[in-house]
Length: 154
Image 1: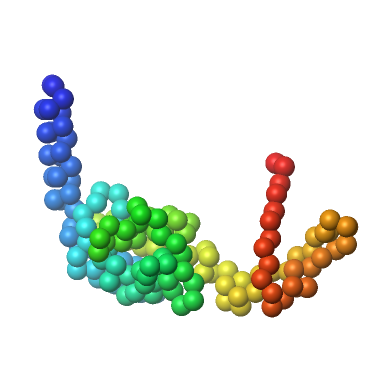
Image 2 (image 1 turned 120 degrees about the vertical axis):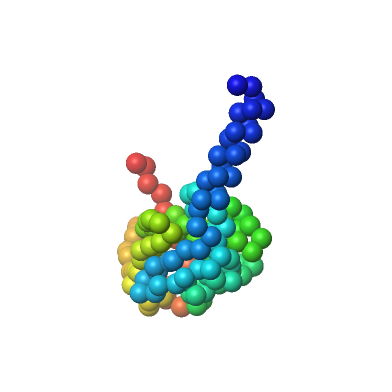
C-alpha cells in the first residue's frame, strides 16, 4: 500500500467514525440532565456550542475565559473552535471526572468549586517565618493583596 492509498483509507475510516457518532448528546452535570441538540462529532471529546454552556454547567465563554459568577478560568486555544467549546477538555483542565457511553456524558464535581475557600473567598490561614525569623500569618494581611511564593526541594 502506498502513502496515498493509506491516507485515503485512513481518512475514510475517520469520516466513517465521525459519521457513526451521534449528532446529539445527553449531559449529566451535577443534578442537571441537559439534552444537547447539536454537537460536533469527535471520537474522543464532547464539543458543544458555546451558547449551550450556561445550560450545562453555568459557565459562560467570555474574552477572559470561561466564567461562572465572579470566577473566570482562562481558556487555551485548543478548547475553542469558532462556536464550539471542548467540554471534556475543559473538564480535564479542571481535574474533573468525566465518563461517557452511548451519547451520554456524565461529569463529576469540579474540585476548584467544591472547596470551602471558594465559598467564603478566604484562603486558609497559615504561618511561616519571614527572612528575619519572625512568624507571619497570612491572616495578618487580610484585606490586602498578597503574593505567596513557595518552593520545595523535593
